[in-house]
Length: 269
Image (cartoon, rainbow, N blue to C red; front, side):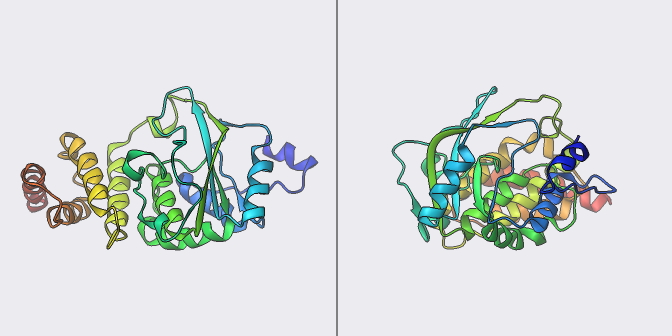
């Protein structure tokens, strides 16, 4: 289909990989080969609303914004599909670096989706450089959007919240994000947590971020017992959580229990 489209539009470039390396690697190869000033990265089975790109381009150029986020609609209701009308707009650094990974006070500013963003290419390249040691050339089918989103908001100078519906997410139960391979899922999860830990020092909302991470971690711990392939990284994340001032006694007990299991599994190796 792409080859047929290329016949009528020389701007279309098809990149063929010999091996499937996942969305993040493929996307970033596309970004590095791109020549435009701005990027939009929709999923193949979703729909952009009419004129949303024209509007974003006009706003970005007029005000020199690095990042624009627009509203999205999904068949399966996401909690971050609309922007709170009461949020300050636009948002500049250094405040932008201080916003939580999933929202300032859970008002959902930074989310786990890349497809409802209009991004200055040079900022994406900086964000990519910021995360490259966390994924390298590994297959990263999960948490890739959260990873790049966190980095984008750290590297962008400005974010404009466009309260306009611009993206229609089509829920596909057969997509990789809904088909969990536990070993790969938790490798990506650990790398994502490792990146956040190493980038929240002196963050205004460090306490809220740590509580978010603890909640996500503890929530998944029943499944984590059987994941032994990445035990060193697993142990590192646990130690980071345990050493944090905001880890209360309830969380510490659960984390220590998990850590003891991991140590036993490592000794068996």
